Length: 227
Image (cartoon, rainbow, N blue to C red; front, side, top):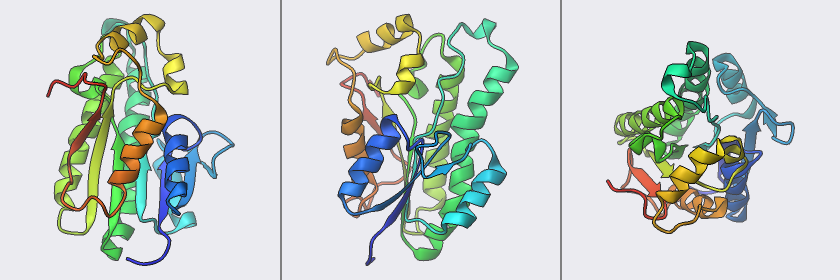
């Protein structure tokens, strides 16, 4: 493939999305950021399927899709959560990811090349207490990635997922300090990760340097991952 590639990053105004945008731009990639924040190139709620379809029509085909947008959801015991809290977490973390893939993957397939990277979490593999909705949706993103990776395996479009442990981002500032301390203590390196460390993995997964990996889960956990 020749010419400058185009990447679309959801949640691109802060945290992992902003770090990924900066890193991909350093590689000469044209980056389009999508977020609720006015600092993004496009203000879109990815939970709104019609808005995502309109976004795809407005920006045209992209070569790279990075799904960083997400919310923590209810920070309390499962029995205290409400159905509406669950629905909002599912709408953003899972169905938002589905919406962007449905909108942008066909253009990649038509071009014969594409890279999709979804952001899940170690919570989706291990399950974090008092974060049931978040853990469930991130586990679903992992399963979604495995499924779509197989569907697109012969198209030139690779679909992989990253499962970080605790990363120093604004989203974690909204997490209960007790929960945050608990999941940080699970990390053998005894520190949280940095956004630029995750961005480096994203840069690799969205490049030509990866060609025989799809539907795979890449942990970046300071040693927390046990399987």
